[in-house]
Amino acid sequence: MLVLGIETSCDETGVALFERDRGLLADVLHSQVDLHADYGGVVPELASRDHIRKITPLVRQLLVESGAELTDLDGVAYTAGPGLIGALMVGAGFGQALAWSLQIPAIGVHHMEGHLLAPLMDPAIEVPVPFIALLVSGGHTQLIKVNGIGDYQLLGESLDDAAGEAFDKAAKMLGLGFPGGPLLAACAATGDPGRFHFPRPMTDRPGLDFSFSGLKTFTLNTIRQLQPASAESTSMPLAPQDQADIARAFEEAVADTMMIKCRRALEQTGISHLVMAGGVSANVRLRDRLAAKLDAQVIYPPLKYCTDNGAMIAHVGALRLAAGERSPLGVVVRARWPLTELKPPGSADD
Image 1 (cartoon, helix red, strand yellow):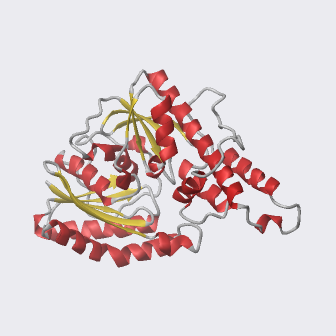
Image 2 (cartoon, rainbow, N blue to C red; image 1 turned 45 degrees about the vertical axis):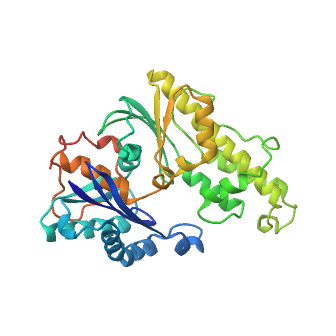
Image 3 (cartoon, rainbow, N blue to C red; image 1 turned 90 degrees about the horizontal axis):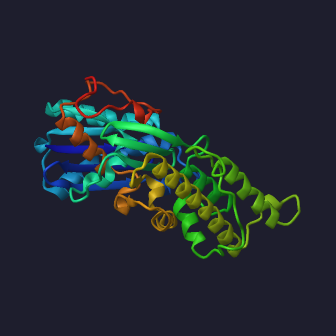
């Protein structure tokens, strides 16, 4: 079954072709980073318009690179949520219209299930179930017990900012620009790990929930302490080494917090496999910390598939379409959609 996957949940337009027997055949991605950089974050209306502008030429490029034709498609999968509602509607509308014109099934895919199962796109990778999943992105920080595909139990989540959002806000405070996560990580590489010690929030109490708002406030207070005491102090840039040292302390705190919570989840469940996925899973310091401190096998998707992409949507779409699932004709998307509402492939209502 050859499936076209379409991802338009936020500020990347991704399309890919996936076949269950042969795996990923081709994928193309367009990033809107330059479009939103001047605003310091994603502007939903601009994101939607750019998806409209890019989706058709990207699908054409995908077909050329793969050597496939539209008539070769057996199904279309698109991100139905969670995400920016206008951006989601672009991909859903395009996917449904294309599937209808070809008289093939279409299915709306959960964005976070795409991330969760991204490591399994490679048929050589097998993860015994149950396993623990750490989903870390701009909009989500969750610990999930995965009993099987579509059988997800929420163990803990962020009570305020997601980890990716906290990275972006800390980077903005430091004057590093957008997107904040990669820029802060690059800045932290030259930081002194011993100069500052930031708190590891909610690690001194039981439970598996996260909170990063206090860490964000601690970062802001540290920045203010280094600025001259004047009326204009909040707009004065920090010295490069000050930026690097604060970035390092912030990144260390986030990595330690996630490691502690993951270790706790593994110990409480008796599970020895951890899958980490989502944009923040590309962070090298976090990967190193989990590898060094956890008595478990840690599995990640390839770096290029940590961030949003069409390949992960095509992969999940192929799994669920092969089980007989399909979405009814129409454009139905959800800005919020709990992962635990999903069901195993083939058991969901049509």
